[in-house]
Image (cartoon, rainbow, N blue to C red):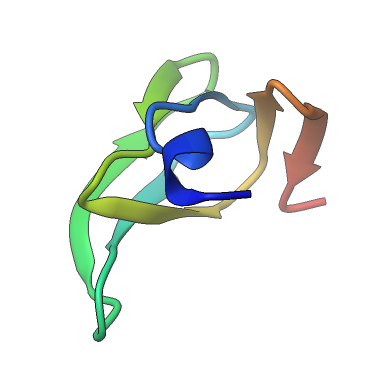
Length: 75
């Protein structure tokens, strides 16, 4: 899979508890945190992979919906 197939993909994150942390990580030689959000139970965030975002880290219980399926974090 080349980079063009990943850039632009969206994921949906639904918090299943208060205080779920979403952390965006950069692309490039050094991976760094570039953005954080905190969600409370029931809140939903739609995130997109971009030329700057290569990974998204989720701390806490959340449902994650992607074009590849659904998974749950923090179980």
